[in-house]
Length: 323
Image (cartoon, rainbow, N blue to C red):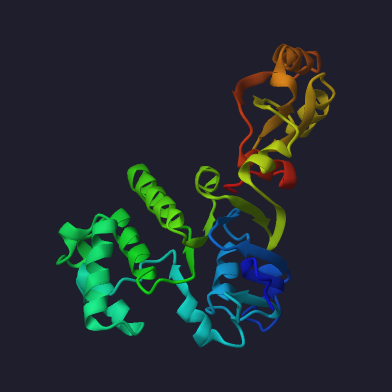
């Protein structure tokens, strides 16, 4: 049974898909996932495509049956009691699932009726949500006439129509333009401020940083690190990150730069070398360039930034988050 503090809990949750030839996949999509999400928090699963984020949400929302392990949402076993679990959840998937035969308003109204709301209650809630998500002027429009950002906002509005205990957002801003992405971030913050628990997946590091109170970094179906964005960034033991592009073997440059004073670590990723510095990097940058030159390595470009969640991911995996 889930602990009183957690609205989502998984124990050893695993999904291993079967290949077309009938053989089990070499690597599980989700591998013995242990996870707890507290009431009222925005919790993020951050990782590249194929990390297991969508499969995790699929199992928690009853759409994917686990191979093994257990999961509870709101104290309900999602495998043993999927119908009960569905009453507690709202889901926004990566694909547009709006009913194209209905208007914007009707997509909300009939969703409410499906979940047992009276006609009066559903109408009132639909009109309120249209105002809340800035869609009131589109109430009578066909959904195919909506922009990507509008359609995404409508799907979020529909998903909370029945007041779910947990809202699941799978890559909620994938494919949206920057303005629509900011609008979605604002909507998510407003929902959470009103007490909504949200679990979202994303491969955008800035999205996880901006929205989530806690983040689990995933890769190959496993959680590599879990903490607040601030603490995750502190974990890399660096206050400055220097990215060095140079000719030749990046691994050779890693070896050269790792020994420079002020460098806490260095790793190769996407043809460049990421160098983590301590103490603000005072005087370290010239030493990096001189060390590369002394080793006969020509440096083509250097950029300097503060640590990000991508820095954490690279330090854990040696590859870029967007790979």
